[in-house]
Image (cartoon, rainbow, N blue to C red; front, top):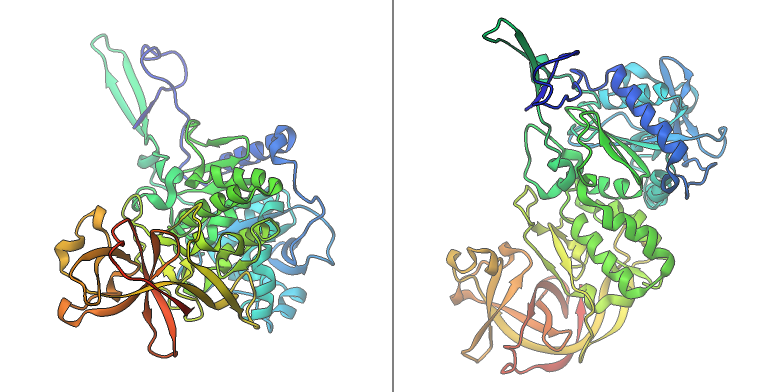
Length: 528
């Protein structure tokens, strides 16, 4: 709790530091005026925030909120007057908002959309846009044609342009869907409670008590377990990851206050100014700004591993969006020395990229570890896993080569799996594996561990299975698997597919110096 002294002199002035009031309603005029002040100051004096935007850029479509008081219109970016715009970042959740489709687009252009028909978050985003004096607002469900594969494939990689060139991003950080809103109203006793006491000399002391807000949920995002006092569902969403990375300025509308973040200032209504970057992305944001122009391949690969580690801790409503929600970042990095983008991996570092591992998050959260329901995603890509993933760095192939990569003709290279099959030559050993019981993998150090035994041999070693439920058989019904060496002492564990001849799927990764007794022979395999 924080104590606030009443105006004027007080005998407690030397013992307590005054703190600013928390308004009961987060969308009150004083909060929005403060937001406008932050924005003006950033425009005026923050060099880092005003270096890169294309001043005349408009997305393919925007909402024009300036034409009529009670309606908004979908406008084509290449035909309307140039001007700054605001972008909204929000959770879709399980509620399907009003949206632009091929059939509704002509109506939304000419007749507009009734403001009262909009869900709370969208309606309040329009209000903020007008309050700050802007004409254009970008909302994904209105500005991308929904259920249109071609428009989706064009627009998803453009999110880097949309958010990096927006004058401001407003984020509904505390709402699970678009009905939750940007603004929140709290009980008056929650934000300010008066305490009166009479001293022995008859003097009346009056103090105001308010919450000392905890900013750690905003700092650590997906790494922290959910806290009902500080709901931050947006920080756990994979789509928000790149929206946040690209935005120059963001106003976070929390359930208690407004938090401001730009390249030069982190601050908030409650005046706790010493917290770190919201959702802990400063290294990734600075890496994209600094490393892309330099083009150092090893540093770019290291940056990509950091991106994947942070991105895979977040959640998606649809498994099929796994690559699409990262397409804008991949698009930027595809113009570097990393080479061709292959279903979430890079051509120049394909050996290291194949040796990814599933990992338990730093703290438990709600992300389940499971195989993607998107059947087009190859098992050798990290994108086939729903859950946190780490990618290896700086590894050199030994006795392993990629013979061919078979690309999908119809796939969009950034938003879908561009290749499903890779042909490889390497050293292979036939083994068997099984699940030995719950005590075998009950602690952190043996998370998802399974035994391996070469056929005809007694000695056992272990490997890390990607998805625990994929190896549940007992020793008597042991599963036949194949170890494929990629480096001297690391490789992937495969099983033969049931529905495709001579094709193998990844189920895990092995590594260590205890493989010397196993007999490996050279073979050509088709990985799917």
